[in-house]
Amino acid sequence: MSNCTTNKTTQQTGNPEHQCCWVYDPLPSQALFFAKPERFKGFSGPVGSGKTAALCVEAISLANVNVGRYGLIGAPTFGMLRDATQVTLFELLESLDFSYDFKKTDGEITFRTSDSVVLLRSLDEPERLRGTNLAWFGVDELSYAREDAWLRLEARLRDPKATRLAGLGAWTPTGHTWTYKRFIHEPVKGYGCVRAKPFENRFLLERTPDYYERLQGSYDPKFFQQEALGEYLNSRSDRVYHCFSHSLHVVDLKYDRHKPLLWSLDFNVSPMSSVVAQFDGEKLVAIDEIVLSRSTTKQACEEFVNRYGNHTGELKIFGDASGRAQQTSGRSDYDEVKAQLHCAGLHKFTTHFPVSNPPVIKRVQQVNALLVNAYGEVRLEVNSRCKELIKDLEEVMFQPDSGVVDKLHDPKRTHTSDALGYMIWHLFGEKKKAGEVNKPLL
Image 1: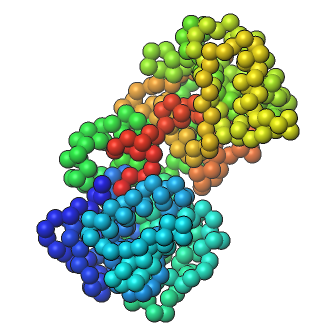
Image 2: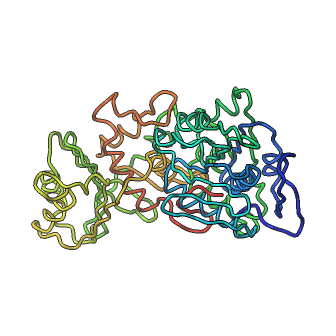
Image 3: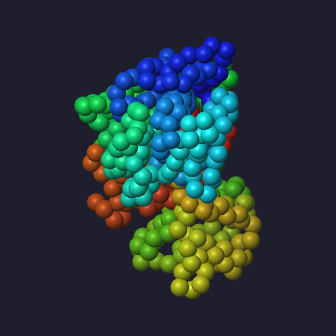
């Protein structure tokens, strides 16, 4: 559902040169966004603030104003474009009764009334954005895109026959990144930005009154401030696992051979790292780690069997997507794991191997949310014997002024915490549910 809902009142968009009218009931921040006169304008707001809907309404308006010209709607990845932006765009086109043709294979929409063409593009490879001159463009979830992708689009904004040249961006705050600097902190000339407020979206709260309460239980305190309240936090120069506290999270818990056992692997030659966990009530506890230098998957399995070969309960195995790649032996790391466990007489196990890994920053945020959520609840603990994992949680840092995890400072770091993160993402990561979907919210 779009957060720009229709009613019976016809209103004109805020830009005076827009010649077409819409039937909608904009939220206050959406109305401000439509009215902004700058050539490059942004919509920054928390989840559920109607960013995608505002972007798409303005894009449709620009497509109709720029008769017969090309425009572009993009997102950082094809998944974001397909699952969030396109869904909202097509919902709006249908609700506004627009006639259009969609060439799915080419990623092109042609408006029949204005003969305008809208290109649907992923921005993960900026070099592909060279080509046709544009009259306008809009980028959803801009803060997750690279700045050079935006600059490439800005360079294409040069159609001499355009009625109105414009560049649009919508995003959720992600710290003091390039979007913050370019649009908010020290705005570039010709740029403007609207910052939506939390709790503003009355349509969302009517459908889901406890929406923000549920987010508090799912997010760590800093992430809740950023995602739900729309605040800009310079947290990326800090520890990656900033919610971890030795006194709060390190425990001594005995292994129970009858309870389900969870084993998660990070495939790396040196060190080959994995984490073993069990649930203690509602808490997940990392009870052990297996960290081997200059090791193979087979040797990691042998060590796991040495320690847990007599396990009688259920066994669940997790890991990173690289384990699917075939080795010189002709089978993958995951094939090797299954073969070794079967050989050892362990047949009561299930495997959960992803096709692709989740975004690193989202996986990290999920671990932090389990360590401490915005209510102050602890749902993840670590056994004191997990020395390398504890070091990771205490010492892994972001690279300066970025959201990139520093893997170069100490080659021994990040591997055990990555293994833990793969397990946590599968168990607690974003699910496709109403109000909390595995995509940016509108």
